[in-house]
Image (cartoon, rainbow, N blue to C red; front, side, top):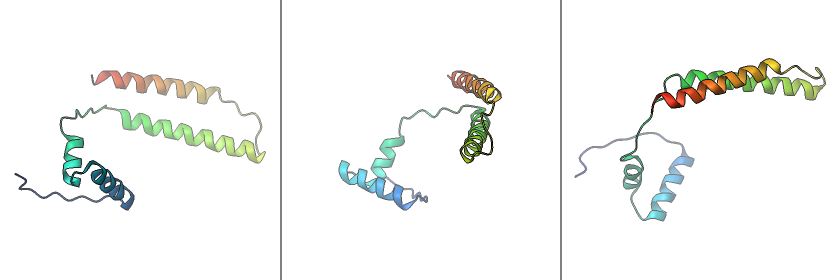
Length: 101
């Protein structure tokens, strides 16, 4: 028996996607959502948001260097530090994935 109401906000694009999948599957949107989330394990990886923020910062720096190179303002930047930092961060992220299991 369904005796609770739960409302949430989503984008128009996500709403159309949900409605399309429910129609295709010949189920209600509620049943589609419930079927999607039931019996799914939630894995929380401590430290991942911080590591991902650092990864994004490295990506932004690399994009800036690329833009400056394309503009001709710098030539042949040294990327040794970026490569080293990226490799260390990747090792850290891989290690995080093994901790929660």
